Length: 156
Image (tube, rainbow, N blue to C red; front, side, top):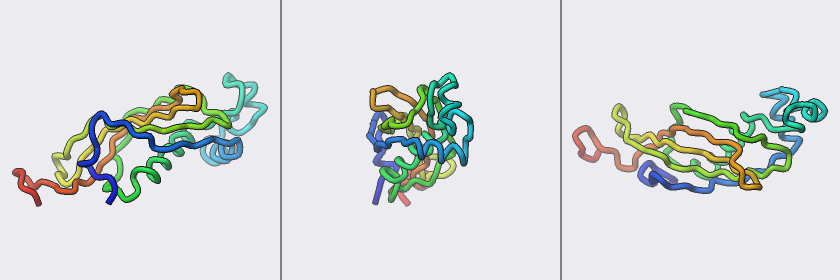
């Protein structure tokens, strides 16, 4: 069995994976989901404040989500997320950039309304090949407990 609520420790920080962005994937994603000129057209991107083609922030987050699911959540007791609290796109992601993702556990608690699961607050960090943090995501994830407690504290 993969990761359960009990396995996650507040203060832990784990490397999740890496991904290198290509021109082709940046343009393909943007044409479908975020067709702003600086994501799809090199000439327009050169004339933009970014001075060249950049990945959509949504593309960056999607890549990180894919890494998280494939490398950490597959086989886990994850039952989804009630939402993301904050996304910060701090620096542009450009073709050829290699993003290394880290996931930190900031807080956790057993759900009061559903005591068979816990809510874990996490911080995702995307760091490029130059050591610069380019994106952060603060989110909550629900994980099932291996040994849930019944009301009153008895194991079920």
